[in-house]
Image (cartoon, rainbow, N blue to C red; front, top):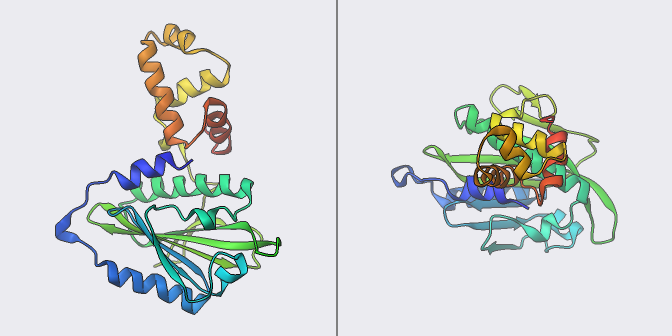
Length: 241
């Protein structure tokens, strides 16, 4: 489900000379849980671990008591993610993918964060609107930490990248997502969507079936898709097809 971000975030090269202090970022994450009653998740890409701090909202979701914290050996907070409405989970993943690509294209600046609204189920079975925010902190050119925050909100719909210095916002529905896939990958995905087989694509493009298969696998990984049909659906959401 998270193949692309797994590869991009976990397989980065870290510069030890610029190493960020984990305790400092744990304090930041913990303070959000206290001041905003948030569920606060600090994911460490270098150790492949997440440090989770629970404000009062953790009790509303039924995942932990206020003031509790834990460390898990994954960058994905699955007990929290399981509370997200399935359709919103699909959109959240695509938003995060676009955000990562946006930050990478804009100088890996820590001045940007992403915010979107999602629906989450409480312990009582009620669906709440939740503001989800994600911040990246860079160690050299690599994202070392990602901080995800979950808090209830009255806002119906947000899906944007925010510059924390200027307040400027960029709608995720308006920015281009074309750079997620290469030109060749988009060409092949269009043929897949038209129902062409790998052999037919190989013949038309005058490339080997092995090369077509490699492109197909890259497409699935980049779009975090389960199969070719799912990749086509996601590409259409991102307006690539």
